[in-house]
Image (cartoon, rainbow, N blue to C red; front, side):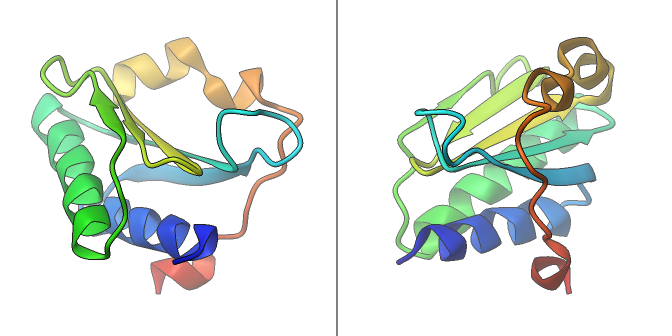
Length: 117
């Protein structure tokens, strides 16, 4: 399985649970942590948990390893480490506070429209 397939799986899973303002940063050459950051948010604790759970379950179903998931119980910022892809699922109130898009502003946005159809 490729990084792109993993990215597609995670993006589609987040979108299936109606993640808001879904974006992907291409972190290649910028961060040693991963190749892609998925950033999105939910409007409630339950939605944040549903998005995170769906990403985790779809990754497993498609043969990808979920290395770690942090913050699920609090549902304010759930980080799902899939290796080359790291998903950040925020509660709407927390997303603007941490503003990862600005922090990693030099990372190009990845076009994900084909994954969302």
